[in-house]
Length: 117
Image 1: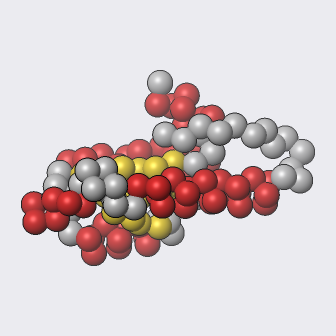
Image 2: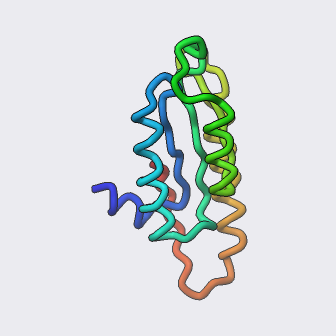
Image 3: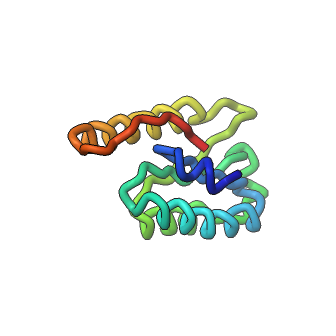
């Protein structure tokens, strides 16, 4: 199912919990799956959730930021509990998708699909 979503997706949020190292490590494989299908120009945002649990952090901010920089994508932290940065994450990805669409608008085979996973 994930491969189908990746095929049709135009933008991706790679989300992990900052207090769960395994959730962070899993995203490395997902990033590879996305870029093998879409290349490295597809809009992707790395997102650390549970920012309100910073005192229980298992993934340092700098480590996540460094990984995002190595992938040439942005990194943001959010908290659904406190509503910190939740809207900003989706707005950022939506803006990146629009920019990507505008670049590809003149391509002969470009189809617009709006699936964000």
